[in-house]
Each structure stands twice: as C-alpha cells, then as structure tokens.
Amino acid sequence: MTKYTKGSIHPSELREFKDQETGAHIYQLTNDETINHNLYFLTSSFTSDQNYLIFTSYRSGKANFYKLGFPDGDIIQLTDGDEVHGYSGVISKDGTKLFYTEGDAIKEVHFDTFAERVLAEFPEGSLGECSVSADERYIVTAMKHDGKSHITVTATDGSGGKIIYTSSDQTIIHPQFHPKDADLIAYSGDPAPRMWKIRRDGTKNRMLYEHDNNEFLVHETFLGSQDDLIVTHWPYALRRISLGTLEMETISDFNAWHIASNRDGTKVLCDTVHPDIGLRLVDVETGEHVPICYPQSSSSGSQWKKDRYAVAEDWAAAQQAGDREKSLSWMEMKVDTVYGPQWTHPHPSFSPDETAVVYTSDVSGHSQVYVAEIP
Image (tube, rainbow, N blue to C red; front, side):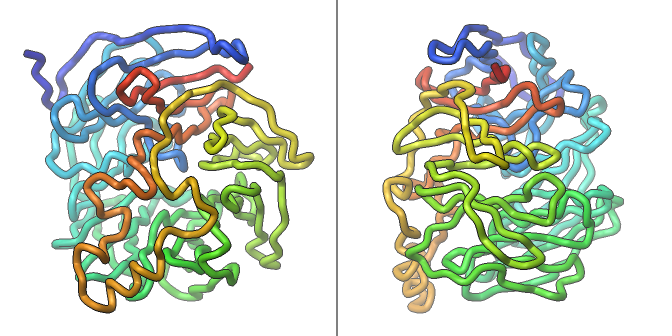
C-alpha cells in the first residue's frame, strides 16, 4: 500500500496527447483514482520559473498539497493536515513556499524543507482561500464564525492577523488584493449585491454595483493590474467595471464562466458550460474569443442551468429563522450540489509565461490535473 505523508515521493503519472478539436498539446499530470485539482483559478498553479506545479489531491484520504516537477518529475507531498482547504493555496513570488489555510489557521509550508509555520489563528473560525498583497506582506481571507462572515488580514512575517470587517447579512467570499495596490481589496457578497471593495484597514467599504438576485453576477476578479474588475453576467456575457467611475460595459456576449486575466489585461481566459464550448481565450479589446482545448469535464452544479442566484431568499429566511441546516451557505456544504462539486469544474489559469493553461477535468472518471499549451 502506498504511504502518503509529508515529504513522501511518488513517481510521475504523466500522459501526453493532442486535443482532438484544436490540436493543442495536453499534459495529463495526475492519474490517480481520487480527486485531484489545480489551485483556485484566481492564482497560478505554477512556480514563477515554471519548474514546478502545485496541486491538491485526496489520494491520502483527505485534501493535501503536492509539488510536481513539470512535466514529468516526481510528485512530492507538501502537507499532511486534517483540515487543509484545497483551494486556499497561493505560491510565494520566489517560488519557495505556499500560503494556505487549514481549519482556523493561516499557514505557510516551504517546498524544500517542508517546514510549516502558523502565521495566524482565528479560534473556531472556518477560513477560505488566500490572496496575497502585491508587496507580499499580507494575506486576506474570508472567514465564517458564529454565524457571521468576516474578512481577515494576516501579516506574512508571522506577527499575527485580525478581522477587518464583519457582515451578518451576506456570506463573504473571494476577497482579493489589487495586483498593484497593497491596500485595496475587492470581495464578493452572497446574496446580491455581489461586488464590493474595502481598504486593508477595514475602512471605505463600498458597494460597486447595485443589483438584485435576478442579475446573476459571479467570478469577479481584477483585469490585469488595471483598476477594473471583470465579471461574468451568467450566462450571457463577460463584463468589466471601472473601480473609479463604477461604469459597467460588456466585453463579449457569450457564456464565459470562470475567468482569469493575463498580466496586462489584454486577454481573458475562461471555461464554459451550458453549452460547453471549451476553454476560450478572449481578446478584451475586440471581444473575439477562440478555443484552446475542450476539457469535457462534467462541470456539476444545478445552479449553472439557471440565470439567477440560487435560492438566495430561502437561504436568508432560513438564517433568520435559525435553521442551521438550511442556512448553510454553498461553501459550507460537505458536497455542494448547487454550485459544485468544485473539482468537476475546469477552473483554468495561466502559466507565468502565459503560453499554457492549467485546468481540471473528470473526463477520465476522476478529477485530474491537466496543462494545455495555447495553440
């Protein structure tokens, strides 16, 4: 029986093939009969030199992070935790460590020594994904605690963290630091209105766009290093909004789903579903988009067949009535059938040199990690 523990080394699982539709060269990096997925699409899964790719696998029986020498190097287990958030990982700029959350703690692990350090603890809190500031001095995360949603900011030097904002009427998700401004954070609220911004010290909290649950906005992120957000108006269009003027405009009218920008904000990468027309590369100026490859993942979740938010009023009513089970947000469900499971979604992101994309697909019967070279 294969032993999985921190530092354990396992042979390459590489397969290579061509996408039948586009001819793109595809690397299948994992081939294990468990859940395997790339990091969240809002961050790169590659180290900056592209020598290694970091991914999450459940092959030990629970979610943990692994390092893989790209494309055919050994697979090395980085963590051995009981409550690792598999989508929380962010690679440091120098490619030497991973920031992530585990239960109520924000941690870092070094890739070579496997040494772990707790950067902050929020007792009995449930922490989400990490986003690291441009100067790499701070980490922002969302947290659920005592039935409320919070934004936390933690210092990467280990000097601790604090809650900067609390909401009792929205679930806060996906807080992200601006790519250049280390004091500016964008975050998402559920139910609508969706898009907000706040300063790192918790001041100047501001709604960016007024809308109700009939206008389904999702997956917002920064457009390169510009002062714009891109957002999916599901399932109709890829849109952008200026953080200065708050003006919204359409980039392209199609079912862009999970979206990620290149560094200069000229291209947007996305997956698609209902219909699945593959991973697409969008020209921001013209709105034209072309296929990269076709992951053919199952892309589960009942919500993606709808064009409004999932039972937001029912969720809010259940919260008010104190019904714990019915008031669980989709992020807290053990296996989310509304928006997920997330590991059945491609969640594509760029390689650092922007010549390839990493994504997840369960076309083989289990979710695996893939890299496609952009044709």
